[in-house]
Image (tube, rainbow, N blue to C red; front, side, top):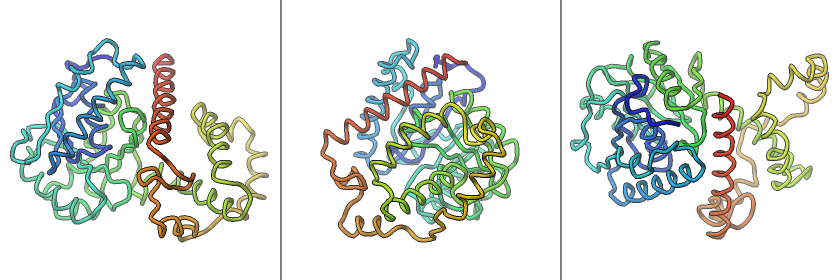
Length: 322
């Protein structure tokens, strides 16, 4: 991606509320494209960690040849840190809320920011699970609010979901789609709001079936990961599920669906194996114990490097195709 500081399709100024993994990654994505980005967190330690992670991410992107000659420090120079809302210049085109998934905390912050932002600004939430209708309740300009769902790691994953709340003006959706494409993302604009949006509903349908097979003694978590990494993942990265069915033949697709659909899991509660792990204090890699067993620092670093290596390779491939 080239430096697009002068690209009229890239937002001139962006405010990111939240400096966690998602907020920092979004800041990198917009700064790479030339936007001036302000990142907010109430904790200076969080801001310091975010800046370090942004620097590490930019170094990896540079190593992969994805900065196209723009120095990582120049990109990072477009990002400013703030631990006080009053210190932020809210004369921005776009304001993205990306704090913890707590309805009341999000609504409180969105209300504060709406009072500080210009009437022309688009205010969006990176929520992945909360009702956009409820988040917009209480805003004085709900027509300028929308869902804007990114995926981890946000500086590498191309997909973003753009979702209108009930009162969202369609011009807001169009603008978010345009900006997303301009910074190198592949936006999908949903026709209506639905819990979990599209990607998480698909992901959790697959995960529910994976849990059912593991608990039913069909396979192990390691087997599930291998099936996805060696089969479904590469195939669906090339052609999506519906394209795959078209290639297979819809008569074949129907025959398989008739036999398979009635046997799939319809569980409505999280699986016992997950609850057992949580009761043991297992939180995944961040606690050192998860669905795939124990993680030490080296294992965590290796897993993160593998993810980055493969995602950057896919980004280079798609860039070559375009």
